[in-house]
Length: 406
View 1 (cartoon, rainbow, N blue to C red):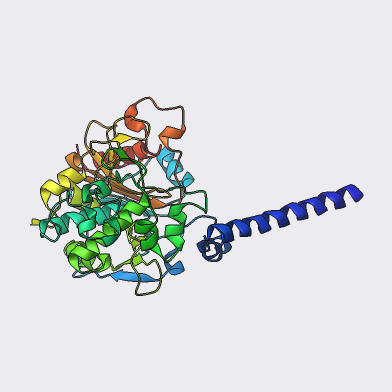
View 2 (spheres, one colour):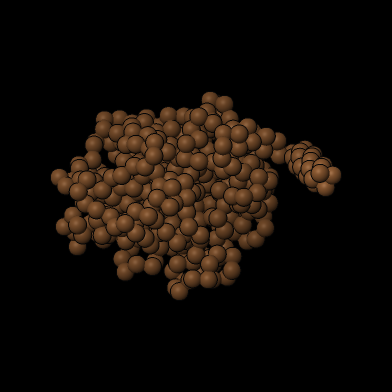
């Protein structure tokens, strides 16, 4: 009995020391946003953000216009996935899986409480939406050139950052400091998610660590900078601009919502947190397949969309050529046809396969490991992508064949 009491006593002391040390670390680093994270996320029963965090933050509406409903295939609900495919989807806590072929939905399934009208968080898929809007502003002449200095729009870049261009920000090759960890609560991206002083973090507190335009490093802070450029160039917030240039022209069936960094007058968290239905996410994939054209109307410049879907001529941190990223957009070279995609944390995907006129949407709360963290890489094309990606593409392809595609 005495031994048990001693064990509990030391456990209590260790827990107390951890709590005290953790709080001291927060105070000394000034990262008080962690308390908000604990209050709004951890105490709700999960330790990471989920696709259902809409009510955690204030939000701004991305207004839909006149809906253009998707056509449903006459055999929707009859096309089947294999048991192995279903096991994969369910093991990774899939919320929705949709496939569109030739402007027609051929497969649509929801799990648990998710449904056709339920909104889900895009997480970093929002980065690609911001990039598309940069292309719109460029076509409209509101941005003069991608090779303009960011300092032409943002005074915070008139210092040592004066040589950073919009193209550098688009390709995440700014050379600016940033910590992007989805485990540590003390990293920059966690602060960007929960803190309210997003502009100070994204623009003022970063320093030059390497020459701009040479190395691709994934940095959510760069996307936030793009949003400030967009707002300065257009005179509109990103939600208003997205509504006017994308959501309404594409005939979205539901309003979307973009989470804000602070109160209702603050800026959007452009690096993440665009909430929409899976059917409306599907529209973005169709827009990419058609290189910015929506049912005969060119919403985004075709040349820009071609560059958007092209690997940026950069090196990665390991010195190898960039083989995964374009303009805030993912590119997969592991198939015999073009595959590009929007990607967000916890496995949010909008996958475009233009040669097959195919779009695949998967939302949920789980992924398999990244190929770079395994010993199973057989091809450099796999490195940097998550292991489930080829499976999602194959599922979509198999369903397309069932619908009569080739």
